[in-house]
Image (cartoon, rainbow over the protein chains, first blue to last red):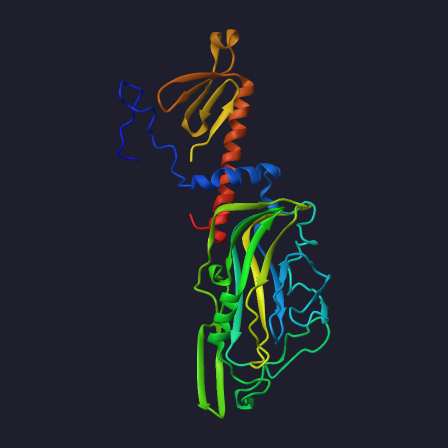
Length: 272
Length: 78
């Protein structure tokens, strides 16, 4: 750009070439951001980073061949476990972003989303015990000591890599806004940037193995939408998850969580 | 990115404006307004309303760039 001579419309030359555009913005994003800013009165104080998240607690058992839709139940609404649908709990801030209100963003809240991530985090062994009631049902109660691990019991080591692969290839996800579906694919197409660990340690003997570590479907980065997705106020959106392979975790006793995360920027009403 | 915006009678890439000079003297009594020079050397005459429209378009562009910067810092890859 700097080396280019200014051209003033002479024959066979192009018009104007002085370097006035040094900001290097991706043109694909410019108009989307401009519309997002214009729609909200251009007040910077109301704009923040947003990670819309919603979690599903998948308890041990045979995976039901059903569809679960994320972002339909907000804070204080009831949700059931994925396998034992009769077990319900009241969702809290650890479960779902409070911007979500029954399948849509509340009045005055909007988001511009550039990635969709599905987070799976597996430990190398089960928890000694999980919560059996209350709003934390199925979450860890006693993660346990390595010395307490025994085969074929709660807290036993399991093949986390195989469980991870089963999760990666058995669930299908799709993002939708109103009646239109957009990005879609199996779990492995939506890696997350938020995982932790990715190392497993195994020891002991076959009759009495021990394991520690965490396995996550993270590569440190996530898939980015080529076109950012605008989620306006009071507009239905969500992510559908369909199980198409009824694998079982009844033997491994390895409940896991599926967290769907939508990264982007959001706008909210502010006072003052 | 040099956004093309409708500024009154003109549709121009707003960052191609390099100077805006308010008319003074006798000429301003007959044709008040602003002389606006573009990067290609051409000069346009803006009315007061067109000057305000240009100011607003520039402010919007600045805001978009700020939000774009926020997006980049929040993880959007360019």
